[in-house]
Image (cartoon, rainbow over all chains, first blue to last red; front, top):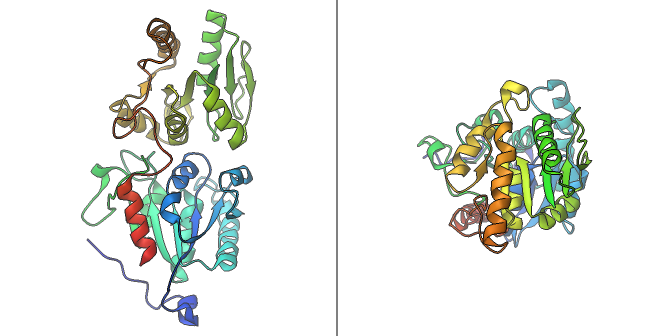
Length: 171
Length: 174
């Protein structure tokens, strides 16, 4: 089991002295709408005691997290690659606004972009692959291996010694 | 009310047509459909293209039967609302998804009691069967489409499994 270390050299924010964290973490939770968002909401109890902000691709999802800070990202899939730079720019501005300690995502591509940018900045990252990927990880889920400190699948038979790990499901 | 939903993503005309045909054949007036951006519009049922999340939840709560695509959002929300659910998986061959992951979802959840119409032809008969079971056994009893949660409970709480919540908590505490 590869306990992933932080990227070296550490990202700029780490160097600029966020240092060792004490107390609650700042968490940015990112998911596309639909199933990804429903799955993310089922992790809310694990966020209790931390300072959580949400980012998704549909403004309508705000009602599900009325008291949290909330950001809307442009939706993007790998089938429309021209939209990726715009989404990445939004992701970076959300990261700059939130300065999270941890980024958590249940997919899909906007979440992967968030983890990628977060990783480059030395922020810790968690990927939980969607329940929808029961036979194989999604494309984003496979790519997440390279940017997730904790890389999880919800299906036991998709877990491998080299990752992803299976540590339960949103059910 | 029977609530038919194609979810928030791409159109799913096969589901809309099959449910509309069933509503027509049975003369039902209590079918409501959320059809997304599809070309095909129901002629025998009330419909809307999109619903806000709060409206979705309201329809999930009020429905006596949910008929949906096999997206995890639809399945989880049906479980959370404790409503019976019948799904028709989207197929890549018909351009309804990019790949056949909904077939895999159905195969996994079918083991857990999810009612699956593997083809659109099977949808109407399965709705009939569900309604017949309900009327003979009473609405309090559990028909063939009553999903069970992971641990055999008829209704899913709002949270992920304790194991997963623990793993996320430990990660955040590091």
